[in-house]
Structures are given as structure tokens and as C-alpha cells.
Length: 155
Image (cartoon, rainbow, N blue to C red; front, side, top):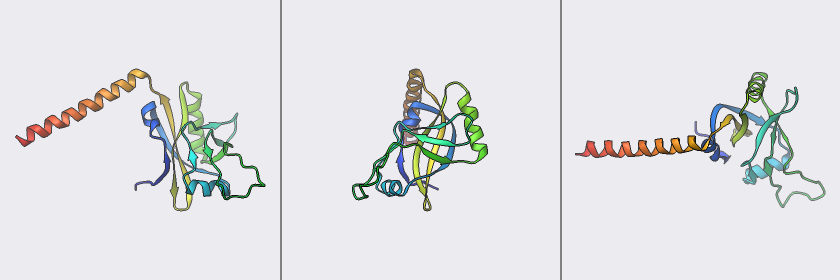
């Protein structure tokens, strides 16, 4: 089933090797849900963290901009840390990856699942510059290979 993403961070696939992908729920306030419905969110630098010996997982550095039409007497924090909803096995898996050197947890995208907002997070390891060059060469070779095969079949 194709997911209809609210926002998708495509740069993750270019900058990191993805080891594990997990779907997580997110605890939002009412004004945040309304802002999500109008795509007023940025997740380009957001990441997931587990604080000291805690069983709570938080989304950090994501920015949900409040709407102009909401009331002004309440102060809104667009960069607050938001708690994620995961089961114990998933939290244990994330803790194990974070204890290994070089791994981090980033946000791939947000999407609606029925009426619930879900977050797709991934355990990733950073790519070096030579890894990125190698993948580009591989892509170009595959494109050229398909062109050659296509030409040979037509003749």
C-alpha cells in the first residue's frame, strides 16, 4: 500500500545507509494536528533520542509552525520535544543501535494512517563521500546497461 506522506525527507537516502525502519506514533497537541493538515512542518534536521535509562523516546528538532487563526493568549512552542509511541521491543532495538558507534535515528517522513499521524523513523549510519560517488557510478552504469540492452533488442 502506497503511503501518502505529509512530508518526506528524501535526502536521508542520499546521506545515510539505512539499517532498520520503524513506524511510530506521535503525541501531538490540537494545534499541531491542524498545522500538519496544512503541511506547516519541517523535519530536515530532526532526529530521535532516548534519554538516560528511560523508556520514553522523543522527537527533537522538528518544527511545526502554528496557524495564524489559532488563539494568541496561549504561547506555542513549535520546536518542543514530542514523545513517540513505540512498544518495548522497538525501544530496546533502538537503544542497542544507539549504543553502537556511528548509528543515529532520523526521521524519514510523516504520514496519515486512517486518522492517526504516524512517523517513519530509521536507524542509519552516515555515508562517506566515496560511498556516495560509488553509488552514483553504479546508477549511471545501470542506466547505460539498460540503454545497451534496449538497442540490441530492437535490432
